[in-house]
Length: 496
Image (cartoon, rainbow, N blue to C red; front, side, top):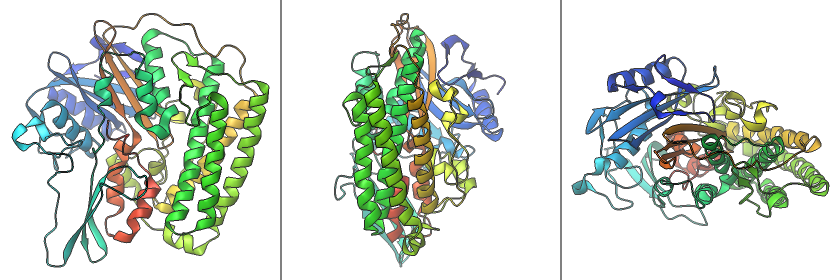
């Protein structure tokens, strides 16, 4: 990757400094980079006198991101057969830019526009050419997109022999809201609102990634106290969602004590975020340059006591799972993925750590408060439902220790920096944040006026949905609800 531009997390650089390679050079840089230990974080196009394709790799050993670019038009040789991590990115590029990656193994719509923009092959929402298996005893089971309860829309199609799933195809895109397109021409007063509702359970995660983009473009420093408050809010978001997931997993196997307790405890943790800013999901807490709300001593004490109580109760409730042989019988070995498969397809977050991959933006690409305080990375090796549950349970404890430590020694000073300079023109900015599901990527390109000409968001779910599909192979179809909940991926985070 000697031809690549290397940037720190949250770094920016003039577009003119981003290597502009021939496609052969671009392909070589990506393939050799992945072979050398890099991971494909993002692959996206930008309208710049044609379509300029950017490839971003993460280098854990250097705590840096590398980026290369090329120009594509019409058709180009697909990267996916060599770099499987590119498969969904290339499908998205085909859909958005009418550019076909030839020899792509499964070129299908991501969000229901036709591949390569061919009007004669356009599909309505929910129409697609599904993979099928032939045979007298093969049967097909279609689930969704409308589901019971409040689950978001998504279609799951199983190819089964008896109860055994040989192939699961997942089709999303039913609630595509065009957020990336709406951000063009920004930033403006609506931009942060889009980020906070991009995936509603990840308000702080996506909001933080966006604020860091804006701060890099305007050279705005963030006060130490504001960094600490952002870190507290992000970890409370993680704790609340992990507790909720563990309760939901208990419910999927009919273990009602843990389900009932965790549902209530999750609400208690959400209320702690409400103590900070008035919103249980953290809406309007973040603002470029810092945060809108401070904590006084009384609030700090309430949050400290409330968090200690909630975590203790959560450990007791979740501990019941590990003592139940019937629960362990359903968790262990179900929906297992090997480390090799997880690395090949580029899993991130809890799903990757459950396969033994030690990956976490907070320690691998430290930013803000995480540059000064380390949260040990939790991993497990079995890659199954048990592993994904166990990693969550341990991350609750680690995040709580981090928050309690910050509350004991909050930095003094301001919570909002004065506005920085004007938005920098013709720049590229890259931002990573460890959301509660995993790695969040935001990338922005600015035009000659310093406005967004391209804004790319990669929610962790974009990487991980294919992992769920592979976890069901050669499993019983009755395992699907449990496997699905153990990943707990975002539909709206995928449908941008």
